[in-house]
Image (cartoon, rainbow, N blue to C red):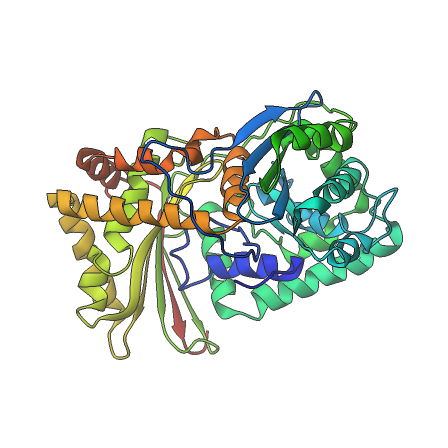
Length: 468
């Protein structure tokens, strides 16, 4: 993987939301470049990372996933606020603030943070998603206290200098032009989400924000957003690597302990609409060479609706459209109808989740034939149900992927911090493979009927070549 700048972090997030790359179940998350590490052998009943957690007096939660296989430490500060917390009419504040957090603090001049990290031989970055904003560094383990001092300093009191505020707005607007407006698939996906959920629903607003609303954000808006959401009790510090618990406890108290506590943050996510704004969205674009199909369904998530469906929907997405061997791949790709097709589920989110079907037809295959083939796959699944063999295959492949995730130093902080930031417990990550292995065929078929076979917010869309 490559290292991502703050600009390309959002670009990566937008790309993961653009057609046809819809198989990634975690939205908006950029991945840090970290050296591969040899995976430790773990028993079937052991936690993935063996992380420990405690809370400081000011409310900051601290998590340590100790890993002594290399003298490196990853330091992630998660703020439980993303574009889903942007006020109506002011979309883009969370992301804009992420940019301004690099503009200095009382003890660090503007831009110096990243220069210090680079001087120490490390890498730093940040990303904004719908559910969280994260700031992170990967350094040689002895430099961890310095990273903690720098990060705590800007958490407590970012300067957001007025003379740099307007210049950074121009950077954000240029980022929007590059990431969204210059990419026909990104433009389509933005319009698709806004049509399905509503342009002011937290799922319908783009993470980077609508252009006119970015232009309307004031510096005071940003100061107020920081004062409300960047409270220690709304943050999670996750450290992974060659770090001892006693040392981290001492450093957390020294550097983060003095950050003043603030009132508790209440996160209130709107429910999905009862129906999509339109049943279908069809757009043509001269910049597109091949058609792309997308269908999305509102779905329960790990935090919303019938939460017991979450793991079953993970398995359902894999057996329905998780690559070679899945039903959609067999029916569309192996039959020569599509060059790519599948399903994905976005369920580890705060609020309503979403279930996707997608396809890219082979040249000469009509859009009607693609939809007919997908509808046949769905009908057969709903009528006859999945099989025990499909269930076992999907669980086996998904749990193997979880174990492979241990090979990267950044896996633990990304997975643990992402879950904790939406209110899930450590065990939601640590024992995810065991929980997935307990999913039954009855649960998968019931989840399919609830999400794919019942009325609710869902929409189909085609992005086609040609003039609008």
